[in-house]
Each structure stands twice: as C-alpha cells, then as structure tokens.
Length: 250
Image (tube, rainbow, N blue to C red; front, side):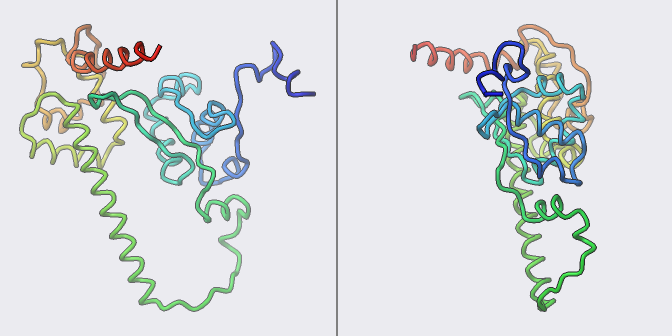
C-alpha cells in the first residue's frame, strides 16, 4: 500500500504517527508504563525528535495518574532516552514542556537490550589497577554529587521565585531540601501552582510561609481553583506581553 493511500480518511495514520525504536521496547529495565510514555511521545514527535504534549494530555490518553506518570518519566530521563526542557514566559512562569527523543543512548542500554543474558557471559577483561579504578570511581561520584547539588539549588530558586510570599528564606531552603529528597520536582512545582491558584488575589495574608507549605507537604493536597487568584494575577502581564508580540508579527 502506498503512503498516500495510508493517509486517506479512515486510516489510523491520519491523526499522525511516529517512529518507535525497537531497542527501547526490548529494554528489560523499563516498565510497561515507561514504554507507553515513550511510545506516546514518539507518536507526537513524528519524523522529528521533539514533542510537547502537556502532562494532562499524556495522562489522560494513557489512563494513568500524574504521580505514576512522573515516576516512570523520571526513569526515561535518567537513562537518557528522553531529555526535557521547560519553556517559560518572560516573567519566569511555566509555559510548556518540550521533550527530545534522544537517538543516542549509553552503551550499557544497547548491551542490555540486544543480549538479555550478557551479564552471565564470561568476557576476558584486561587487568585494571584497582587503586586507579577506586580513585576514578570516587572522582566520578564527586562530580555527580556536585551536579546534583547545583541542580537542587536551581530548583529551589525556581520554587522561591514561583512562591510569591518571600519570608524566612533560610528555613524555606532547608524545608525544600527535605521535600526534594522525597518527591520529584514536577510534583512540588505543580502542587505549588495549584495552591497559589486556590488563593484569591487580596487574600495573601492567608497564604502559608514557604517553609510551612513545604514542611507540611501541602503541595500534595487537593486545592480548589478560584478565579482572580494570586498565581494568575502574577503571570497575566507576561502572558499579555507574549500575546502582544504575537499580534505584532501578524
């Protein structure tokens, strides 16, 4: 069947399609949820490597909760199958996630996928000085730890900029490190935005201090949306600015 015939009305390809690498589907370290998320993003990427469906779109079509989505997406990011870039408005507020489907993966992933029993095979290895190996391992761990610390500092700055009540920063920083060690940043960020959307502009006096909000894990609570809230009041000028730029280009 020719490609033009496949795209006729009634074909399953009319809504778009993508390419799913067999290597990822055969990887035994990935859960079925991780593979479903990966395949979904590939279908949105088409023939390219970029996709930007929202979390609500992904979880809605896959029929999974957001916590479940974040848990398995984290594995894909850590293993290098996906990269994530957060696009923001001029004022720093969140705009959208842009996913990159990486075409190059670590060597161990190839080995795991193509030879399931590779870990049981006998392979002759050259002699390596154990002291040198230990030093290299220590150095690598140090680099990873420093990278993680820097990343968490950036996350805290994102949180503090997002949370409009700037009180007791040292306590907020300490509470954030505790929270980020137990929860993914995406969960904290979304819960914070939901909380800010539940507070009406002018009622800021009822808003918890940032340290209290984090220590009590209020980002995990259900928050009822109200109109004219403090979050949207903060980002509205930047949204209007972006829209104005768009109109100027027409």
